[in-house]
Length: 256
Ligand code: NAD
Image 1 (cartoon, rainbow, N blue to C red):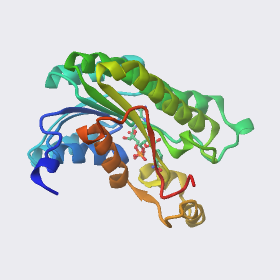
Image 2: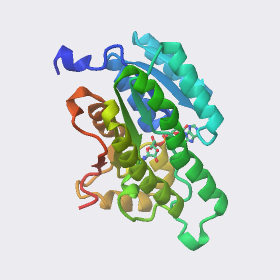
Image 3: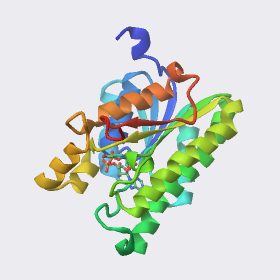
Image 4: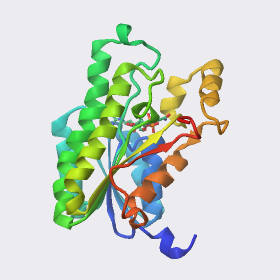
């Protein structure tokens, strides 16, 4: 990789939700390594403070605001405070999410689980974009990447609330991309299949479940957080300057 590519996000300000672990944490480190300043927001203070320390020890810059992404006021506060801290917003990665109860079928799905999954995974993404878009309009440009799922493109036992939320994220991404294309704000989503993160460890917690998950992917393995983040970074970069409204499957062929 040449130096220009390594620093393709030099001085860009990037907001990342759900930065405690998995894809969000990997995204924070990758954007920083490519020159960005990151606004981190998640529920877990300790792991994010450790991440800020790690980023600063690498010579990067990061700012953490604790927030529960099921609560509109906390999302608004996190985005506003982060933008005030760094003075603007160029890129947003709306990643915070929970799995709910993947193995529970529709008739048995608990209403409380539905409400929580929809609040974080669907409404949380809309409320995030609601407060990110005006800041990007001020910049005259922007890129939003929503972390959806293969469960937002096809059915497959992820639980009705999770499917509803992720299909919703794919739909909101297209609708918002269309509304803001003239503002030079690109809005895309990534749709990963099963990725090696704490979420997948929880959802596939026995050897039998894990082997079944691996078998879903023609490529013969689960994906890595880095493989998702590389796609997120590409969508965020000027290399994807003509790409908006897309839902990019990152799935080892699982949707074929
Ligand atoms: P993860 O559990 O490691 O990360 C989830 C992150 O979201 C954590 O930082 C967690 O603290 C945060 N979060 C959860 N609820 C929150 C809330 N109410 N407020 C603030 N932060 C909250 O799992 P991951 O796999 O890295 O998941 C990241 C995203 O990727 C999620 O949206 C998930 O649905 C999506 N995804 C994951 C997979 C997979 O197989 N791992 C596949 C497709 C999509």
